[in-house]
Length: 184
Image (cartoon, rainbow, N blue to C red; front, top):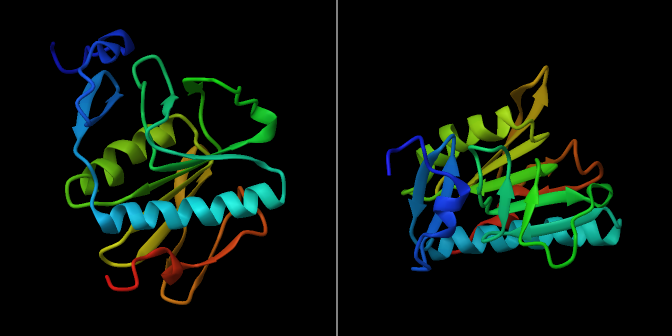
């Protein structure tokens, strides 16, 4: 298969080998199982978002591996954590979500750092995902980007006891340090 020509149908024929596969702009990307620090941060973010979303009956918070179909040549992507508002109508039993989530979170790891910070950043921006968080367990930093004039702008860098806030999830408050492995 020539890079740039991968389709969703090609993806469906890939082996179920425990790797995470994603197609962005027709290019196939593969990543291996993540580290403890990565998964710890994913779970803490998902727990905090889900608690807030459920308490306020706002929609759904899910984690990878669940497929998002952003565009014909950008499907599937599997964000680490994402939020879809209740009005968007995620259907029970669905195998994927067709469209842009309202908020996406990617947690960096050494093998996915550039992919999450550049390739996925551009893909989510192009798909007009309203809010994109990049969480870095190594530096214990969360960057929050929001769309302005169809481009991402940095809403803030959050670390330590700074409180992360969201434009999409108004009222959400999470202390940045609480998302990272205490022993890390």
